[in-house]
Length: 375
Image (cartoon, rainbow, N blue to C red; front, side, top):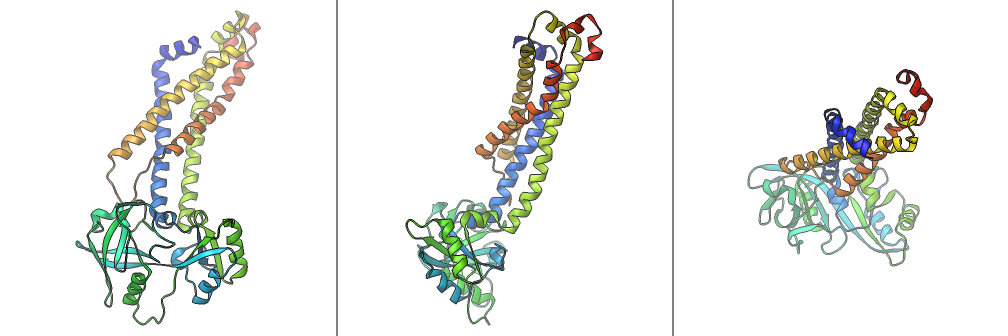
């Protein structure tokens, strides 16, 4: 092992450059993951962080809340399905609202107060206790959606809503989001569409009875109620069209970055191994086992990756800390970083496999020949 560290110290500029290159790649990977996490949360945080375990959509909506509506007969049929302990209406729509500063587009989620669909990430203040009160996303507090602020729904006698609480990660479609009573949602809908004779809910929130499997219940609802699609909360988040589109794009970018890590580490140590052909052959000739040389190579790969990961993760944390708070927060998650670090070490060893194979193929007898050309 000492041989590996001595070589790193002796050729510190070479290894430092490689560590810096790996660090840049790690930074890009971690930063993209952090940006992706914040973007997804801003897209679907309102659904992800409400307390209904099952959400029922119109089956033509393709898991899109904006495109979903349910008829009264469907909502009634859902409540009668075996295994349903409770069901409540949830309404969702985007409205133009007047804040203290300027008009804004805001999303309203209407739910039955104290029942299903309630936000579960309250940070400050309290939950609504009656009509015309709301919990807003904490990310929009500085945009006129702070506790005590009043929001007017623009339209024909639109309701005026007072913010009484702030919750973490409650945005929908990267827009300010308010959780209000279902009656307030109906009043807002009537204000922007006064000719409508009925306000239809977007979703039905369902709580399974004790002992009922949640996945079994979603299948039962689909089978017994025509024209609906029941999804667990996690499925509703994962199958959201916006999430799927962003996930596909980010996955491709991250996959390419991981491939580049394999290539960079692999080619560096392959070139290094070829350049050290004669010294390695001499070491084999004087009795150094192949396993010893392979261990030294693995140590060097580990040193380079450790330095690169420290540089990359540290840079990502620093950038996340100093970046201004915008519409999309940058969230570096510990679990994601740990998974990435483990994956990078595994990929680096895969990248070094060719070099390890060349070391294992060294023939000590070549010490008496031109070993540099035949390794």
